[in-house]
Structures are given as structure tokens and as C-alpha cells.
Amino acid sequence: MSLAPGSTIGIIGGGQLGRMLAMAAARLGHRTIVLEPQADCPAAQVANLQIVAAYDDPAALAELASASTVVTYEFENVPVAAAETLAARVPVYPPARALEVAQDRVTEKSFLNGIGIPTAQFCPIDNDEQLTVALKKFNGSGVLKTRRLGYDGKGQRVFRNMETGGFAGASEAMGNVPLILESLVAFEREISVIAARGLDGSIAAYDPAENVHREGILRSSTLPAPIGPEAAAAAKEAAAKILSALGYVGVIGVEFFVLADGSVLANEMAPRVHNSGHWTEAACAVSQFEQHIRAVAGLPLGSPARHSDCVMENLIGDDMQKVPALLAEPDLMLHLYGKAQSRPGRKMGHFTRISRRH
Image (cartoon, rainbow, N blue to C red; front, side, top):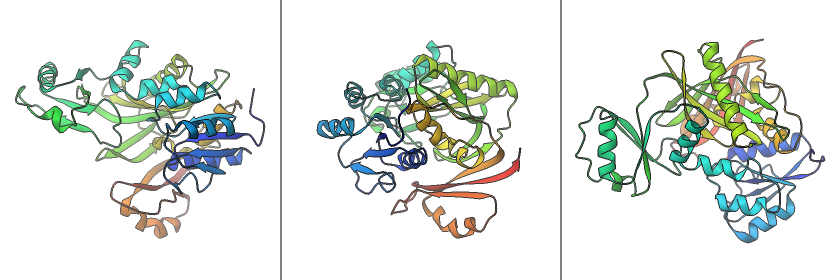
């Protein structure tokens, strides 16, 4: 059953993704209420109401549940217990299980492998001795990551062709938290698929984007990605498998490595709208943000077809100085996030250049 126009959608998290979800909800006639501890956050500037409180505050969760017909979230580190508390009172999409899987890299990769989706090899790491053994297994190379809470390249260390042993202090340097060592993948490019699953089980997947990262932060997404049809189909099929296995409702972002033979390995999944899908605002009739609102509201999913080729780029830190020149360009869509302060590494907005139209 779909939400009636004027229904309120709760959003946990007040960043730019929550902002764009609130804007999409408004276009479809819905109200939004945001739970975010930071006052005057980007999402609150366009939502109908903000609850200023911690994401796991019991009184705030009760208020959000009472005010909302359905609740969603804009980032994957929402406390699972908070999502489960809300789900006892109001529908929560995507389900708490998606958060549980995505919040721990070992759980995530085990889940992906369990449903037949290949990933890089990996080993859980709890101490320097386990790291030494794992690096030996991976011929002295690998990416050491925190199992939880890492994003935009934070919480990572790369080892390349190093002799095994002599890694005393590595675990301490990473914060003495549970870690994972992933084998290095000789990939040709990185891609991602943005896909959605509706309440009725229908699935819609956008075309894969080729992504370029620098210093762990996404810089650009290009459509079409220079990959073969088999790789594109495999990535879309993998995203659909994930959505179905989780009983998912909403939009998901799944990142992949494309190997020289055209095969794909899943890198990670994000149970939310995704930075590498921002291009859909400018190059599709239905953006990833509207698609997510449609899904959680029980509305029919829109077409993921792309009407134009495009390149989306993030505006990070001092890139904001480019705004006047960007606005002078034809065939360019700019989206700023309303953040008061610019600082190195901070995403301040994005723009999408449209090229060939279909």
C-alpha cells in the first residue's frame, strides 16, 4: 500500500544525502522530518522539521516514530538497535538487516560470498600476529581496514610486496579495533551500480558508472562506463541478488572492481543512496533520490533509463572557488549542499556535465 500524499517520511541523518532525499520527497508531495544531532544541518534546511538529538536517543526515536508514516536513513552507520527500536513501531526501509551486514566488512564479504557474489580474498585481523600470517597468505600485499566505521579512505593502510613479519604496532596504530586484511586486486577500473527494490519486489538498476577515487574520496563518475556488456550485466545481476537476499526496500549502491578478463568482484555495498549515483539527477528522468522515496513510499519504481551521457564530479574543499565558472557552462547541473564551512576533504557539492543525448 502506497503512502498518501502529505504523509511524513522520517530520515535518520542530516547530511547532503538526507537533504536530497527530502527534496525528492517534497516533489512527490510528502513531508519529511530529520533526526540529526547537528543543528541547521544540510537536510534540515529543506525538511519540514528537525529533531536535534543523537541517533540512538530513546525520546527522539519515539518522537520520530510518532511523527512518521515510514522511516529511512541516509548513512550506513545508523545504530542497528535504533533501527530495530523504530521498526517495532513504524516501517523502516531499508531493513535493519541491511545495516547489520554493511556495518562490518567481514560480515559484508561473508554475506556476499554466501549468495554467490565473488569478492577479494580476506582475513579477519585482531592482532599483529594474525596480520603477519594473513600477509604471508597474500604474498606480502593487502589492504588493512577497520571492520567498522571507515569511509572516504579513512581507517585504511596499504601493504605492498612487504616481507612478512615485523609489523609490531600495526594494530595499535589502527586503534586496536577489529580489522580486516583484503588481498590487493589487479583491477582495470572501478564501477558502481545504483539499484532499487520496491515494496512489491520489483527491481530497477541504473547503468554502471566508472568511478575515479583520489585519497580514498570519490572524484568523478562517468557514464557510460568503458566496460563490456557482460561486465555491466554481471554487476546489475549481483546488485539484484543482494536486494532480494536482504528483502530490501529502497536504493542501494554497490561498488565493483572490473578485472582484465571482464569479470567483476564486489568491493562493498552501501544501504542508501550513493555518491556515485548523483549523476542520475541530471541524466535520468527519475533520480536515485526520487527512486528511493518511491520505493519506501510503496510507489511504482521509475525507469532507470539514461537519456544522456555524463560526468559527475564532486566539489571538495576549495573546489567551491570554481562555482562561478561552472555556472557559466552550458549543459551543466550544479548542486551545492548548504554547508557553511569548506575544509580539505569535505564534500561541498557536485556537478554533472551532460554530453551526448540519446
